[in-house]
Length: 205
Length: 205
DNA sequence: AAACATACTGAACAGTGTTCAGTAAAACAA
DNA sequence: TTGTTTTACTGAACACTGTTCAGTATGTTT
Image (cartoon, rainbow over all chains, first blue to last red):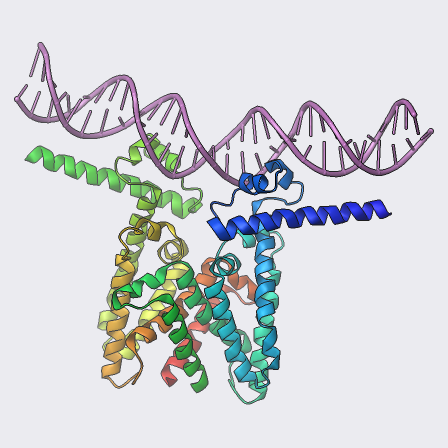
């Protein structure tokens, strides 16, 4: 069945073509300006064609949100060389924050926007978030084996840590760091120092 | 000028009529389903009329976002009776989190959505956020006068505290607490325990 | 009573996501 | 090779969206 295989390959290639165009427009003009007609025009197809490869607009952005996770997880690869668990945890936080700062739109899509989550409405799982969170939990457990975070529940502690990182990134993504404009502080400095302050709190826990 | 005064009053009443309708639809059907034609229909006016009272849709949601801040600040009124600064700080965090949990859509509008901030694009200020943040900073300074948080900068510390609270609320608002569904943890418990964990960290700082 | 000002409408514009009958090309069967 | 079926795609249509604006009707002033 060499022909059925080719068809399948072409289907996958077409999906990728759409995704590529969607990503370019999304990163260039933002979510709202990424319309199906916009995407279709960029790849010389009609808008209806996209529906032969994706269920709807949310489906496209769900795929893009998965892509974001793959990029982030890749940036976390070097962490495996940091042997000391707590050092690795701190480094993980740094990579997370840096990813958000350097890939604002991807981060927004992954952790703030509703589109990708709406697509999993039936699924009820959030695969990517779940598996990424597991990495954090595993790391926390390793820290606990070294004697850190004694008596603290890994579920609540992971949520607390994740939330604190996410809070800074979310305020940055949605322009709420403006609140510090009067004291001449930019988002970059706030996030850097905010991270340091949180780490110094973690160290004393 | 009794007639000019009446005109001004009517103008204000009409704005309020529009805002009331907008709020009802927003809280009932969400941001996306709150269209100008929807609002107009609810108050028996044509969609174009709204533009005589508001610059655009963002203007309406900016007013609604101010309303949200007034509600939240009102819920913080009882805090003045908590004399001990650090106790007041902890209570403030509790009120903040509870407000977010009980007024998901208002919180989202105030701290996550772009619409109200886009409206202030020219202004470049975020009045409400700025003044609310000042309350937090003042409270932190009071704590410092009691000997707490020694050597920590009030700007960065306020950002760190705000971010941590916001992080939990933002993950809740945008359905990212789903990531804990596999361990049977609901958002309510995560937020409650997450808050407690953060407080115990603050206490050790 | 005539002139002006204000408040409002309804249609129009340019866009959105989504669906679907119809068509042309490709694959398969005889 | 012919005829039949399957697949891929289009273009128009539907029901919306925010926004603008010429025209009208009502209220106010002269």
